Image (cartoon, rainbow, N blue to C red; front, side):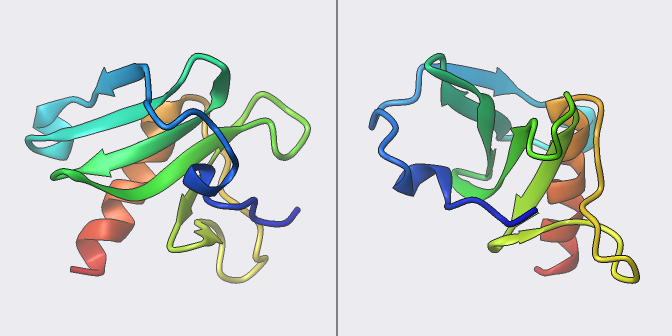
Length: 103
């Protein structure tokens, strides 16, 4: 499975009409998922006012979500397989952890 293009480069509408605030206890302030009703399987992870990655459902042929940060799937460094998540919020948490480690 290859990493798809950044959602902002796919010709989706300029304005995002979906915004899901993420738990401030887990993520801190100003973290959210944002996306488009026309493409519900792709959500940007916004942290502190900017895109830090995205999550996407169905890339492995299942209903699982994968996390993408800096153009790479976040996953197992040994098997090189993307980590699968049951919800977009759990995938966003993985992006959040990577973001904090790279600060």
